[in-house]
Image 1 (cartoon, rainbow, N blue to C red):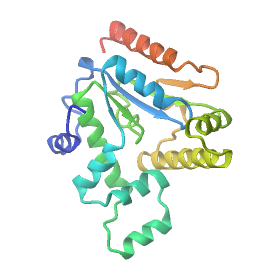
Image 2 (cartoon, rainbow, N blue to C red; image 1 turned 90 degrees about the vertical axis):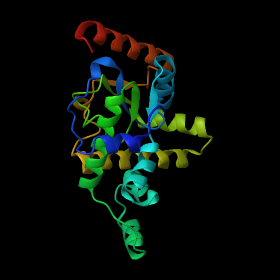
Image 3 (cartoon, one colour; image 1 turned 180 degrees about the vertical axis):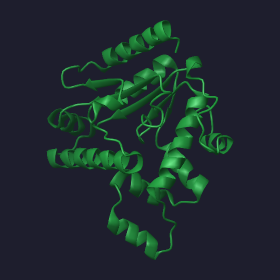
Image 4 (tube, rainbow, N blue to C red; image 1 turned 60 degrees about the vertical axis):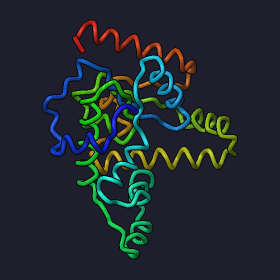
Length: 223
C-alpha cells in the first residue's frame, strides 16, 4: 500500500471530490460474491496493472480515525446491524456509530483513494460514491450452487458450512450497501461490468478482458 488511509482522510476532511483527476490513473471498484472468483480476478488485476488493493484496512483505519471499536465496525459491515450485538456493546459503554457516520467516512475514504489513484477498492459500497469517478465499477458474481461448490473446494468445507458462509456474506453485504448508501447491490445498473463466472471459469481470461476494456476507455474517452 503506497499511502496511509488515515492521512488521506485528514487531507480531505470535507469529503469533496473537487480536484480529483481520474484521467491520470486507473481506479477500479470491485464487488464480489464469495466463491465467484472475485479474489483471483482482483489479485490478477493488481499484479498486471501494478495497483494497490484496499479492503479490510479500511475497517482498521475507521476504528483509529473515529475511536470506534474495530469489532463494533466489523459487526456493522459483516453482520448487518445485529441488534443483539449492538445491545452487548452498549452495555459495556463502547462507542456506537450510525449509518450517516459510516457513509460520510467511507465517502471520504473513497475520494481520498481516488485522488491517489492506481488502486482497486474492494467492496464497502465503493462503487456508489465513485460512480462518476471510477475507471470501472465491476461486479463479479455467480449462481449460488456454483459459488458454494467453489467455497467447499477452496476451503475444504462441508456443504452446510460453505452454504452458510455464502448466505451470511451475500445477506450482510447487500444489507450494508442498502443501509449505508440506499443502493441495491444486485442491481446491474450500478456497475459498468457484471461478470457471471458460472461459465466464464478462466479467471485469467477475465483479467485480460477487463484490461482490454480499460485500454479501450483510455484510448477512446481520454480516461
